[in-house]
Image (cartoon, rainbow, N blue to C red):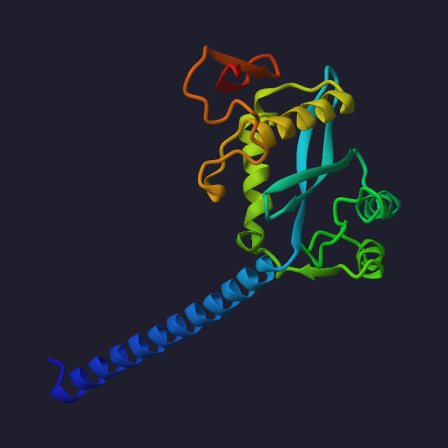
Length: 230
């Protein structure tokens, strides 16, 4: 039968383990809170985010893995489809960097930061192009998609609502599908992040009278109901 001394030792050991685990919990929570506050602070400035979306092209006799680069601006939640390629390399990313930082119509004009994950395709040359235009690339820690949640959530919407429901027979059809989804995403789709409003509302938004019409995209897979403007 165990003695009182041994029972006290066991109770003390469990107490120490509980105290240590609670300490680690509070420390990790504090660090996560600090980093979240840092990201929130960055978002209040001018920041964009980027990630690579990988999709598949199912052809008659081949399966190709395509990489599509998408860039999202937090406010007002605009998404820019850069390009897609079967084999993105350093030269491909270099050209994307030049297009994004173009003086006239570059999507990253006026931005101060670009969030990116640790994908090797965000190469040193691509980051240097951003730095030359006074845009600071912020590389996130490995395996932390929650820190790039805006783009990750867009990729999920793109796949669930569009790409996973279609069969593509070439790069052109994939590109057209993504561009059509972006038109729906900006003009027809409500967003919880902006209080269920549209990013680019049309004249018909807010009308209470008139016939109800339906705008269909991609053969009716994407639909938007609205009232006919007078």
